[in-house]
Image (cartoon, rainbow, N blue to C red; front, side, top):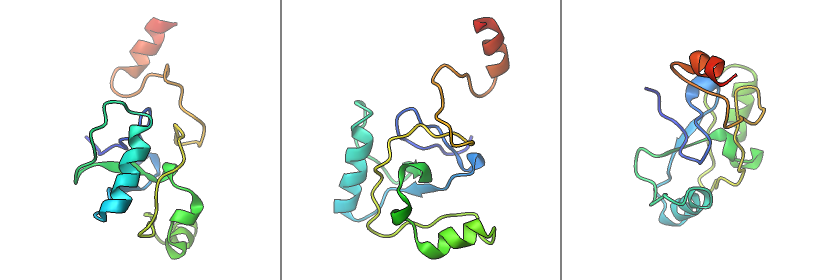
Length: 118
């Protein structure tokens, strides 16, 4: 099972064409990441070493310029964050860049669930 973004209503993985980032080690920046997730997840108790946030939650200014250029030119697949990057975009991204509807089924058995719902 691939790793997923921990932000509420976002389940992006690297298979969705996004980059995933571990929580930073710097305590101040890490607390800002925790605060961002906690704003939408009341059950959030703080990130751990395996917690990840996807690139859809960061503004363009948060990414290392050379990694953005490499990805656009298809030389590299992974974006890199600056050391002080903080997630600020509260979106529910999808592969096409359109917000996901919470009613759209995903994963195993999704086709069958969709038929039953209709």
